[in-house]
Image (tube, rainbow, N blue to C red; front, side, top):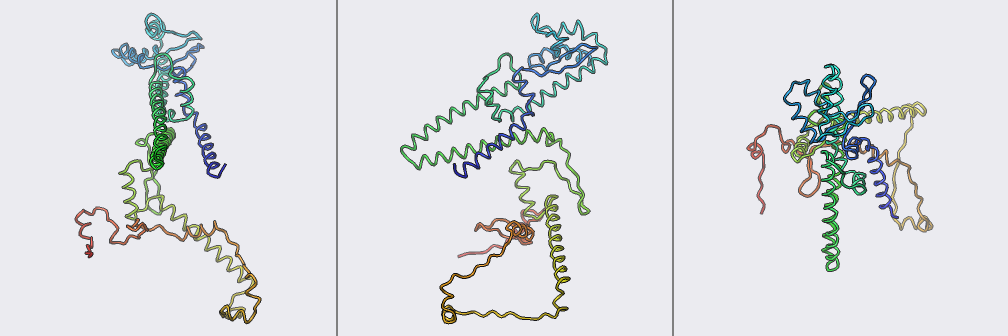
Length: 402
């Protein structure tokens, strides 16, 4: 196994580990796929009661039953439709799915107002859990263990909820994609038997498409994880940071997702505008520059304390370099040319050299020129905010070429 294969295997092991680490995020999705609903257990006067989430058909019946009454009537009907088990007895559909009406008439409508409001909190939590599961269903569909579940179990039985509908639709589309990919590979094999160049071109197109598909999968999963951690981007409150007497608004999650955002970010870089991150990098570099300079001064002071300065010790001297040609060296010492020269290698740290190069390099405003090399922008080239198109045209210096 070559080095590339080892690296690819290590990368795949890392991806599998990350996928297993976020598996707990899809617990409600798996429960909705497996049982068809979510459950919530609580105790009422010593009696265990289990509530469950509703599917779209049951929600339609609930709206018809409780939409004409008051708010408390809606709460009571919603609780009645959500009751799944009372003291271990499963409330199954009876008399044409009218079990919710019987539960309402025999028990829920006699509940005290405060009891109904407290129980309704559990019902609301189930509805919120279903909404959260629907949001992360797309990310779950892109996970490998989701595809394995589909291959083992197939379509769920019974009336499908929204999560089951999305999951089945996605996997059926993936089955069609795999079928088309096998046919495409068969076509590529036929083309390869007649033209190697044509087969190579088709293979490159296939690799580009697969890479694009993998990038889309990773983006969907990352968006879902970020949503679980920080919520929707529109609901995220930015952080307000004060730095060097100035106030900066820093978003919690910042990444360019659209072409317009990428162009705006590029134009800020061209204009030389520094955001909070750039200032933090400058502060980091300045801190280490001062640290290294202080270490150099301390080392110099220690040497002067041990040996004394050049002025105090009175040391004087000079060094003269004299060069000889190979013919002159052969006359002085003929054996010198037959011996290998003495090589002396100075020990240095590549990491320290690279770090010093990083500290000594400042990011300048510019762009990639026509010849493919970086070009530094001048004050006349740097665009200014608020300039009109006519102002930009007037600053241009046209030249004529023969």
